Image (tube, rainbow, N blue to C red):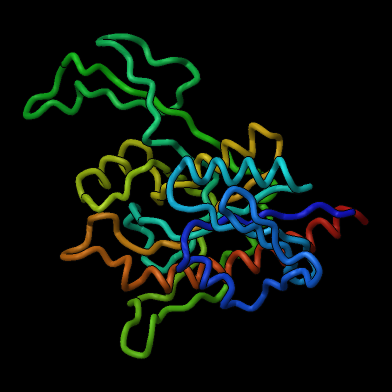
Length: 281
């Protein structure tokens, strides 16, 4: 029996956009399994067996739902998808990003003053260099964090999505100034923080060179890797994480970002099926 491909999203607008594609077909005999308050929906997309779940907001929910899926069902790997904040000025709202790696920017190694960052940490922030106005030492020391890599061969498969057509308009009177695009191979960040602050947004971009911010992806990647499963993340950019004038635009452009990312997920599943078929010949 062929294993399932797992699909994990976060909250209802993303779920609504996914089901609105019409691509997911429920298994007529066993359409779902309820586990610990979550409904794992069993079905298929274009002949590929999939199990879909909405995990809920935040890192704890994401890790729990991912581990449940891997423990209970026979899986090939997991696709995490949803919306995210945009922190890269070369990207636009409505764009879809498929990162190569994620930092947990709420999980730090915070070391003593003048101590050395652990060698397995790959990103560092030295607080002394941030002193205003002159910079220099302070007793806050420095912090480091880790990168979690998505599956390289799935990332290569996803590169075929670059150039696919995405929606530009929420409705007839609300459109983005440019046609959205799919971009593969940048960096993302995850923390239990909804970022709507321009200064913190700039800090995350300049320090870690991340392009998207969300509250689930890194732990889903980490959970899959620790269990030996493939994983990829597909996120639609819904807002500017505090760089905008006035109110956050997630309520305006969140549905558009969710729709674009749902279409990208369906296309990835179709492409991945073709990739595995070719590998089996």
